[in-house]
Image (cartoon, rainbow, N blue to C red; front, side):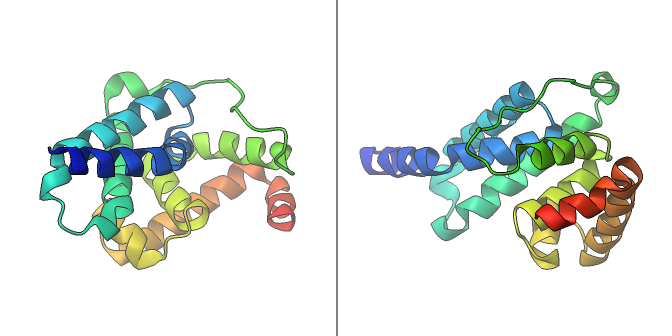
Length: 168
């Protein structure tokens, strides 16, 4: 890459690294793995930077790379039983840290594909079509995974789900 392309990549990286890391954490539930996934997504982006023609779609490209990496990793046998009891890093300036902690803990119990759909739909703000594009599946799959994921969250959260809705 020439200097202008490197500068453009560096600017994009600085602007998006925290958001990508946070999304990775919501998808996998572990800050260390989130750092690894975010780094892998940015390395892949750097490697393909010249071939990406529409730089307005970089967020979608990175999101899709990130989601696929997290879902693929969850299919590996040595990751299936892994869980982490660590409390997520949160800023004390956030108004509702308890709600966020509860939600992240509940998301850990949802299967990876359903978790990815829930994170993309409700925390990243994508619509059904955008989520389907990010995951490389049909809109019907997104709708069914959303329904199953919400049911799994309801089973884990129980009465807390109503509190989360009121807080959000």
